[in-house]
Length: 606
Ligand code: DUT
Ligand code: MG
Image (cartoon, rainbow, N blue to C red):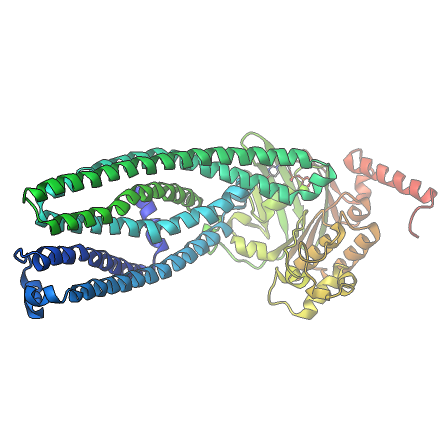
């Protein structure tokens, strides 16, 4: 599992490894140059101002002598001052370069991660999307991703910096004075230990905070999506209350984390101050006894001071690493979900004529709750089939099985004699056009919404699809015609208009099989008849499945299937079915009596 997560992490920085290494190298250089200054101060105090022997070796000693040694430097202390500035300049340059490269890595990695995740989510099975909590998924794609980005670009760098700093400083300090080094480093393990314990503990709290945040996002998102219904039922107070609860829960868990953080900072602050005090006291005592030089004491104070922040920060970085590791888990959970389109490129891609067979098909969404039960029927190529059934009878489910949004539990669905399980899903969905029961329009222009099914469609094709769907005149009367925006930033279409745009979208492709899942329910009877008439003229060889509750629609079909509680209870033509006792005749009787009532009342349009 650990191994897999590391691989995932590595895959995110793929292509950026060189920049990453450059950034790390510059950071190591910057850290090291920052450690030179205390040594120069020591040199100035001990060997230039005071007359102690120079503790330099090799190149540094010859450099010192070349400048003119102590005699020149004591009269020209500015040279050492310039040296300090020069080192700071180098330090600045290295820091800048390191930050520049890490910024490149950070942005590219973030882009990599986002694209990879988005891509994966696009291909996850429909059943995954049905069960997943959208708010939670959004959070994983945004704040969890950001935590991993921060881990790669900041925390990991911080850890490497702290390690470089501690090890180099320790080496220098040991070479200067062993006893004072021990004093200086005695609390470091304590701080690291405290930090580590703290980090393990707070990880659980972070998870709780994340979950609370996810819940809050879900409530918010659901509320924004359902604003109409909330208003229609005057449920604002209830919704506000619900959000307040979620928000309170988030506040509380987040507050606990903040409190723990404050405790951590306070405690480590105290330990660090005690350490500085100990160095100062013992250092002064030892210096007065001549056990160490003033310059060494100054250098130690400088080093200890330099190290306080990185060591203490190590705790925070470790804690943040906890967050990143939780986030990485949450993201790898998504990657663990196997996409339905693992077989995207596999499977047959036969020419599809449109002959459909359901052979003893059974299906259930949840174990033990059958939705379709032993469904068997046959449709010839080019036929128009109508399906009637009460709500929840399983009509949409039947269609879902045909395009393999779900796979059958037992039995077989075949098209032209080929089991759909053997057909490539992408191919299958390209050949079967569906107008969904609840058409969804994007917040884009009408044209983009229609061309969604086929970006290569020409203007003429779009217009002619709109004519068949009987929406052309409506669109033409909008100010910007086909370029009118739909949704939040543009026009709000009526239910029937949306359905017709959705029909046009589906018609844009040449399908061998067309399915209308209750897609004309919001359109008046005349327009319904007009559209069906147009379809018949344009699509004579296309097999058409129409789910509807209108007898006027159903009766024109070559065959009608009546489905009740997941079972086909009647099949036949209109004239056959009105002679049988059953749901069809009941619906027919009700609708014809309504019709004659309204005719008697003179309320029809004609
Ligand atoms: N069902 C699920 N999970 C789903 C979809 C549906 O459990 O993801 C259940 C609800 C219902 C049954 O399956 O009890 C059949 O649903 P379907 O959507 O197929 O019903 P329908 O005939 O299309 O009903 P409607 O006329 O309301 O669209
Ligand atoms: Mg349905």
